[in-house]
Image 1: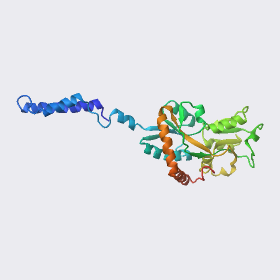
Image 2 (image 1 turned 120 degrees about the vertical axis):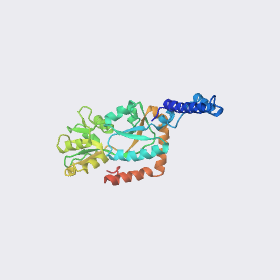
Image 3 (image 1 turned 45 degrees about the vertical axis):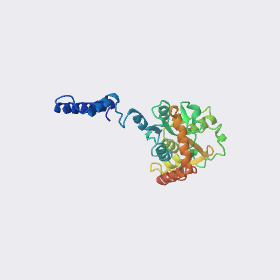
Image 4 (image 1 turned 45 degrees about the horizontal axis):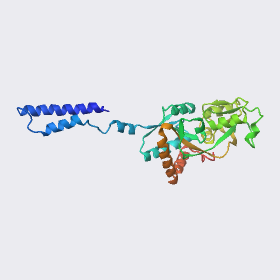
Length: 289
């Protein structure tokens, strides 16, 4: 895109060239003063075209950090944010990172927001601000490949020798497992698929993740044959609302985004998007998965 000053200088040169030609034809100073007036205006008032600096700043896209473009939560969030930011008049771009790197990227300001996190996430990340309107609810649960294994309560895990694992970056799972068994080593893996494969190989006993992602992984071709060997042991609690998180420099935008999300819920648009994604992925209702 042309530089503003270069564009202004180019126009001034064109006017100067045409003025000289006009004067040369007249054998003396130009009799028409309009040319001199126009030239003086260009010299006194620099031209500000449509792509001036302020407009460039407005058009700069908001970078929303996500983690799994094929995952349920990210697919649903992309639909929601695309419409919400359209209503806000702000262009948006989605970039994908591993969960842990995603956090650092937004905290450092290299991305502008995190696509979804739980309410308590703000307690540990002071450079991020929570948008005070949730997107949707998700379930977190424990899964196993041990036949007939059941748990009446999470407290039953205490004092056992079970090997526990969670997906890296899922703080709800990490906090719950470490609170239950603070003295025991608890491992983590970068993907839900790896966690499930370790259950099937008897390398771990219990894996914690989001219900909807486990349902999606078990329905995949990679695990379809062995999916029947994995079952839910117990949920970590009631469905958990997830929220957008923005870098603190976007505090004003956070308030506007909350208002738009609230209106989208009133319009039943988020529920429409949810059903659309569930049909696309052939999944059960996310809060019942």
